[in-house]
Length: 249
Image (cartoon, rainbow, N blue to C red):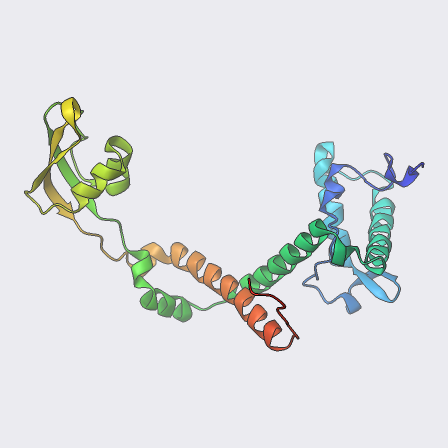
């Protein structure tokens, strides 16, 4: 059967129209006051429309829209709503595993974006409190100065992170060296590959000052708030949903 709406100039206006997801994700803008069109009394927000136009322009050489792109993009957004409505009527969101996974992923993405938007406005005091309560997450890594004896390839002179030692000697050797007392030594390896590692100096990890770690603190704060938003949603949803398990897992 012919599907002319899937041909060039039809359903897809350039590859960038892949941004039109099968599932609906609510826009940040209030759609009732920011609608460019309505489908069955449901608004298509101007934000969605402008985002789609930017995606199409980004796929064009020179980043410019063609003369009829605006109308085509609007019509494709309308087509998308019609197709989604029919898919829901047919129960595809209940039967199709791929669509179910996309819906779940889209909901998580929405919760995460909303939490990040809320957390992005956090004041400096809240970040400092988070930093103090989670200081162990902002510790500098310990460093070691090691001498190798017995035919092993020598390590660079100076202090090295554990991961740098691991890259050169392997994870087992790095663990042994990290457990040594300063001045202590250990025989590593077997047979002709044996060598002695002596720990000459250790600098234990210290807490990075807030000003130095601020970007990492903010990133960790946003990540924590995003994860908490998903957990809180699921906890509330479970409390207000009839869930019955018919068999032991």
